[in-house]
Figure 1: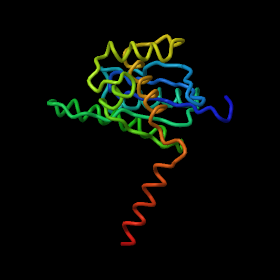
Figure 2: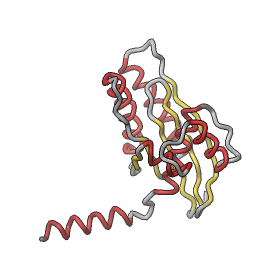
Figure 3: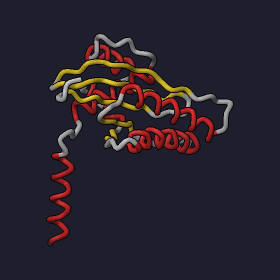
Figure 4: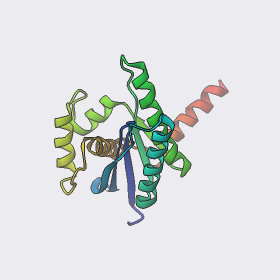
Length: 179
């Protein structure tokens, strides 16, 4: 990997299946590296399932050594218990890159859809078709991996790799505090 290449990982949180997708970005070009999903055993306790997700994700990070990470934000639905479990799986997705000193971008589902397809309410088939078009060399493992690749593509399109946005926010905060 050249010094101008950035390795990006997209993470699609889920308690049953945690999707991941790794791409390299050189300039505006994207290259598929790998994708898959980490599965937890539904017969285990919640704590054991979260541990399975963390251990599996750790292996992915060890193997592919991403430079930047992005995670889909949780949307709240009518089933509060399911939303809470999804949030706990999402915490695993935030913890692993943070443990490795990586910044983690977080994107809303509609932002990801709009970034990849141009439409904020695209369906799964439209997203999968665009991911396949943008990463033609990819053999997509499953729908969770496809979503994770869409998140990685969103990071490539919207990521603040130079820290310019964060620096501007810090300057604005400092200016506001001085007033």
